[in-house]
Length: 153
Image 1 (spheres, rainbow, N blue to C red):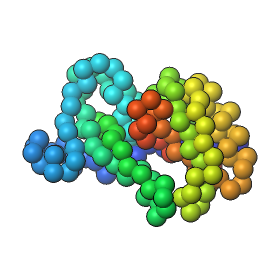
Image 2 (cartoon, helix red, strand yellow):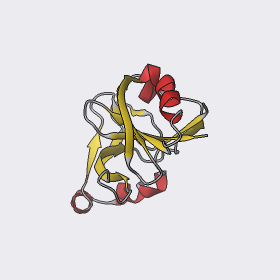
Image 3 (cartoon, rainbow, N blue to C red):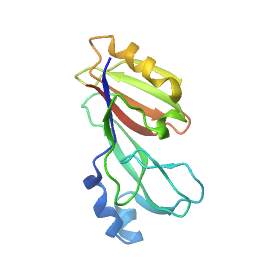
C-alpha cells in the first residue's frame, strides 16, 4: 500500500517569527529555544538542534466538523520546508511511540492503535486496507500532540 506522509505548510506559521513575545501570547504561542534535542518541527518533520529557535503554538490539526475536531500544541521552526514524501517515514517519527488515528471522509474516527514508529509501515497498510479509512493522523503518544498526516498515495 502506497502512502504519503506530510508535514504542515510552512507559510501557515512564518508570520509568527516576526512577532514579539506579547503578540505571540495573543496568538496562543510562545517563543522557545531548544534546550535539548527532541523539539519536533511539524513542518519539516525533523527535530530542532540544541539552540534552535522554535515557536510553540496551538494548532487545529483536525478541523472536521465532528466530535473529533481537535487542536493541540505543536512546535514549528523558521525557514523549514514542508515534508511531503511517498513511501518514506521520517526519522522523527521512526524513533517515537506513536498513536495512529484513522478517520473516514467525514472526519469520524474509525480505528486507532499505538505503535513504535519503526513499525509504522505495517500499521499504515493494515489501516488503509479498510476502504472506509480516508486518512490517518499520527500523534506522539506520550504528550498526545499531533505529528503528521498520512494519505493514500
